[in-house]
Structures are given as structure tokens and as C-alpha cells.
Image: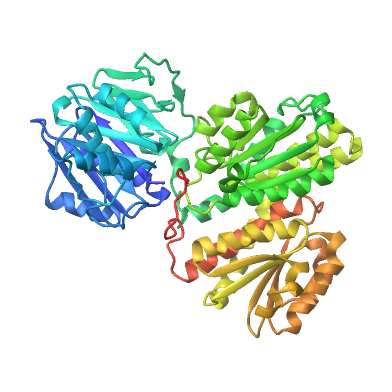
Length: 611
């Protein structure tokens, strides 16, 4: 959530800050601002509610000049979105400015203490506490003030700080919220995500929790929470900035849907071997795999739905019990992880606060922990370690609504299920070869699934004014329906819900009426008769049915539904990876037809870095 940028160098700061904030705007925000130190070392701030364009217009009317500054796009957590609550925040003297991502959990206690010390607050935010706290702690050395502050602040934070007393330095620190720093040719940069600085440098450093970085024109000094020098290796970014641009597509979401064939190929290729028994990419020995008693998968949102698919796949192929938990609930229910159990955390960004907290709880219990993640260098990946992290290689995902990350997470879980099945001896060699061939064929089949876009545009034009849409399915198709319902509500704001088809008669069927749209996935041949029976129940209540089905099942499904979208046939455990594509396109087309801001849905942020 939110975006932080900072710059120190010899160029005008504001254009660099605005460009960086624009590249982070996909994360979601409701206000924006900058703080700049001018040539005389005086601090000036400009901030406003709304889009970055508003800030740009404000800076055109009242320019800020200087070579050191910080910028921020805010997603409201404490206090409504307005000019006063927008970042940066400052102390009463107006000589210290702070930008902040995260939540200061003890802000109320600190506010009370600081008020008693004479500090006057003007905003409703938790962030203003930091500015006043630093002011009371400052004794001529902001690095030391920040080190003291990190011991007093509770919660998650990434902080960028500038102050008049040290007008030749840019300061930052972090705890449980991402922050990267970089330096090149006498210029220093800080950002909450790599795209903000990628046009300036490809070599970055990921700060660890409680570290403080001091950037000057001469370089970067980093110290740990004890004030001792901290050594870091530079991480070289290999992907190009064009990967984070639209490349001619009207929206990032559509671009990323179209990128799924390539993403599926990139995720599979490093784990594909001529030797079908080569599972060296997975940190399990055959002995560990055979001894497995249970797997716990923990994730949020779209990644959680991928985990539901993983449960079906692993239990079916490898015959290991799997429990799937919502990360935000996991550590609050006193979870137990025992011997011969494995914990799997899934996160696109690798910064999801709840998932990170769950991973730390698993590590606290000395569990064998595995991570599925899309971002190299992310906090979750670093905490799990390279040996225990499976990267999905989907490439940068900019749209708030996840698409290609979901597909590659599901593909990775399927490969885990297949590898465990081989090591545990629950599948024969011919079955393993056949499934590997199915996964290898996914990219080509996915291209055909993407080609359903024009059909779905036509359907969306007719259905986009629906107030409610239901999604139903059986088995793996139910897991698929959960993700499809989430996509539609995220980007189109249509109320949508997913139900297991067999649960319709246990309550939800009461909501069916003339004209109600029900979307169903039918990809499981073993459950075809049951699925068709449920469709008949829906049609008997005069509701409309749109089905996504495999070509193999088309003849049986087509006579029973109002609209049919087909995908290439294949093994029933692989088909959901194809069926999700038209369902993503359906959500996208519905949102466009309704005039929604597809890439930046209201109230949502790409990386949920606070609990």
C-alpha cells in the first residue's frame, strides 16, 4: 500500500519524485505530496487529495526547487483522505518532514505523550506522530534519532525523512514494510518498490528490518538497529522497465492476462527436466516426502484461492492432507505445526503483511517452510531463503487485480503436487509423464483461451448492468469460481459470490430469480452429471447461465446453458488453469463496459503491507 520515493543529487527533485510516484501509482492511493529542501536548506511541502495530476498542477502553480526531497502517495488508514492527512507530515517547527508506509500501532500512546510534551497535532494520521517523535529525539544527528525512534515505534513502517539541520542527507528506515535504496553517479534514491528507481539505477539494496540508511551524494551508509555498519550485496534488476508499462494495451490488467501463456512457460521451464524424477528444484528429499503427514498453505485473497486449488491437487495426486488458511486469521487461532509437516506461504508481492506474519509464526515453531512468490528480493523471499523459495517468474504485475500471478501460483502448486506424487509413489511413471506433457502444453492452450476476449466483450456489453452475479462449481471448479467472483467484484464493483454447486439448495437458491446471471465452470468430467443437474436447478428458477467448459464437454453442456465459452480440452486437474483466463477476461470486459478504473479499483491497493 502507498508509495514512497526519495532523491538526493544534482538534478531538480520534483520531476524525479513525480515520475517515481507515477510508477508506483498502481499500488493504489487517494492523496499525494512532496517535501523538498531548497538551495538554502529550507524545507517546503506541497500535498493534495486526489490523483497525482492534482499535485502536478499544484506544483506548476507554486513550484518547489531543490536537489533533495521525498514524495508519497497515500492510501488512507488513519484519517479520511484530505489535504491535511496527506503526506509528507512535519513537526511543529516545520524543519523535519516524514513520509510513511505502514501502521504505527502504538500511535495513540505516543500522541498522548508527545502532546504532554507540547507537540501540537494537526492531522488524524499515525504518521504525524513520527515527525514529532523525531523532533523530540533529535540532538544534531538524525541517524541517531531514527535509531532511537525504531525502539519506540511499534508496528510496520517504511520511513523517508529529510530535515533542515542536515540538508545534505536523505534518511530512511523500515520495519515489516518494503523499502529499497540505490545510488549511481552521485545520486541516491529510495523507494517502496523497484519500478520507481529503475530508470535511474538497476543496482539496489533491500533494507532489512530496523536498519537505518543515510544517503548523500557520496554514497549510502547503512547501520543495523545497534548502530553498527551493515553489509549488503547489490541486487541487479534484470527485467526491463517496459515490463512495467502497458505496451500498447489499454490497461495493465488486459496486458497481464495476455502475458499468461509466456508466464506459464517461464514458470515451468526451470523445473522441467528430461529426467521426470529430477525434483532438485523442490527442497524435499524422497524420504521427507514419504514422511509427510500434513501440508498447511497460508495466503490472502487471490493467493488463498490458488492455495485452495493446491489442496485439491496435492491431496488427489500425492495423497497428503492439506489445510488451507487465511493468513490474516492464521496466527490468531494458536496454530499447531508438528513433525513431518510443511508450511507453504503464497504471496505475489512477497510483502503481504499477514502472510509474512504467518510465515514468521511457522518459523517460530521450527516448521519446514516453503514460499511461492513472484518478486525476487522481497521480504518473504529473503526470510524463507533462496533454497526454500519457488519464484513464479510471472514478471512485474502492475494491475491491482492479480491475473498472471494467480495462474503461475496454481501451476507451481500443480508441479509441487506432481513432484510429491512421484517421490511418494502415489502415481505411476506413465501418469507422471502424461501430466508433465499436459503442463508443457499449457502455454499454447492458454493462447487459445485468451482468444475468447471478443466473445466476452459481446457478453459484457449485454450483462454489464447486472447488480449481482453468482459463480458456482464443483470440486476444482468451485476453487476456480472463488477466484472468478473475486476478480469481478474487484474491478467492476458488481456484487459477486461463489458457491459450491451442491450448496445451492442449502440456501443460496433462494436468491435465484428471473434474469439473475449465474456463471459456472464445467471442467471436471467425473462431476459432469452433478454439474448438469445443478444447472437445471438454476434454469428452473429462470436464471441465466453462462458456462466455461472444456471442448471435450461442449456437446453435453451447450444444450443446458444460455451462453457457452469453450477452452481447449485436457486433463481435469489442468483445465482450471485454462478456465480462469476467460473468467478473468469476463471481469475485465464487465469493468470496462461499466466505465470502471480497471487498473486502480477504488479502496484497493496492490500490496497489502499492513494488517
